[in-house]
Image 1 (cartoon, helix red, strand yellow):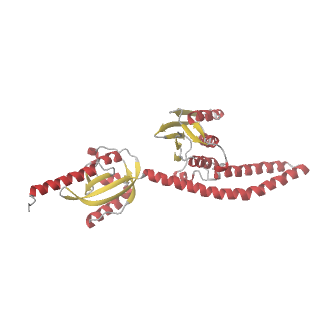
Image 2 (cartoon, rainbow, N blue to C red):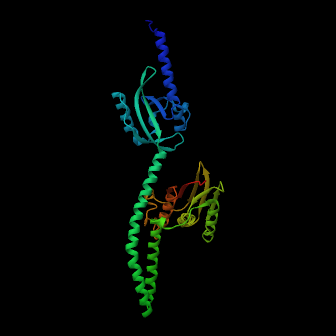
Image 3 (cartoon, rainbow, N blue to C red):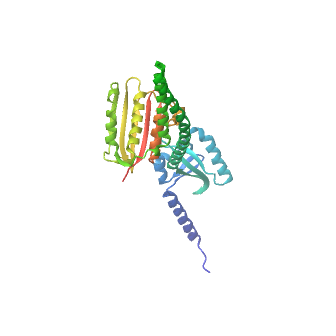
Length: 354
C-alpha cells in the first residue's frame, strides 16, 4: 500500500486552511478574530457592517464597538469562553459603528485556532430590521388593545350624555337661564371628544375606499390651510420624487398630516421653523415633519400616540393617536425624535403603491 508523504499532508492542511479562510472572508455575517481584545482579522462583511476599512479596524480594541456599559459583561463572556473552550450563548447588544450610528446586533463568540494561536472568533448579525418589525407589531397590538377599551368606554359614556343633552334641550324650552347654554356647549365638547376617540380606536368604521395619493401635492395643499398661522414661522418644503403614490384612505391620511402640522405649529410659541420633507427610496416613501418648538422630554416620547396623553396643557392626545393608528393601519412606520428646547421630528415610512 502506498503511504502518504508528509508534504502531501501539509499540502492538504494548507488547502483546508485556505478554503476555511475563503469561507470566512466571503461570509455574509460579520466575523472578527481577536485575542486579548486586540482585533487580528475582520472579513469583508465586517467592513460594511462597521462602516470602516479593514486597516482602520485591525489592531483596534474589540471592546470599542460596544457601549461602555456593556464592557464588563463582554469581557467576562470572552474570558469564560476562552477558558472553557466553549461557544458562548447568543446575546443581543447595541454596536457603535465607525460613523457613530448605533445598530441592534445579535452575536456570539467561540475560541478557534488562527495560525498557531488560540484566539476568539466573534460573529455579529444585524437584527435592526427584525427589532423594528417587533416594535411595530407591539405598537399595533397596543393600539388595538387601547382601541377596544376606548370603544367600550365611548359606548358606555356616550349614551347617558346624549340623554342628558336631550333633557337639557327640553329644559331650555321651558326655562331661560344663561348657564343652560354653557352646559349644552360643554356637553357638545364632551360628545365630540368621544366621537374622536371612537374614530381613532376603530378606524375601520370609516368605509373610505383606497385611492392613490400623491403626497407632494397633498402636503402643499395642506399648508395652504395654515396660512393665517405662519406670520412668525418659517416653512421649508423639501418635496422630492413627485408623482410617487401611496395607496390608502385619503381623508384619513389628510387628517393625520393635518394633525402633525398643527402640532408642529402649536409647539412653536414665538418664532421658529417647520420643515416638511418627502422623498422615495427602495419602494418606500419617506415623509418628515420637523419643528423647532419646545420639544418633548425623552421619558415621555414612548407615550406619544396614546389616547389622552398630551404634552399640551389643554390637549387630549387624540390627534396623535389618529396619526399613529392611520400610519400603522396602512402598513407604515412612524418614529419620533425630540429634544427639549430644540424641537421635534416625526419620521414616517409608507409603502409605494404599484
